[in-house]
Image (cartoon, rainbow, N blue to C red; front, side):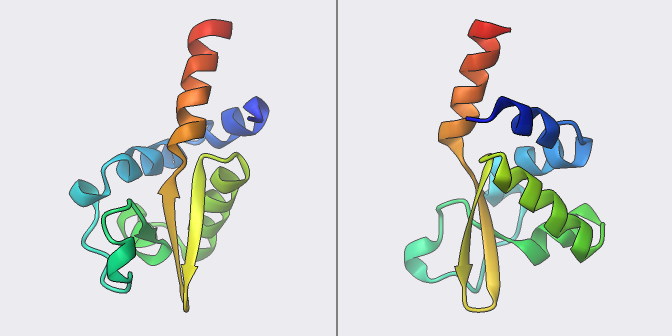
Length: 103
């Protein structure tokens, strides 16, 4: 876990908001129609859907998601032309424990 990268990723309010949305994607996003049935319900959300909800440009949302992925807060999954993201709960829990114990 790279704490510095996580803090950098969390330094932007919209990136924090995206993590919040991805915590419960069924509430915050429409169903992902392009996902194969075996991938549905696993928390994956398409970049274009995140971009639409956020109201920022595709290039900016891609940059934000990449920063969060590099911090291991998100995982990506590509299916055809679509890229989907989901939270990396393992790292998020490790980071929460780090905050609780070490800060």
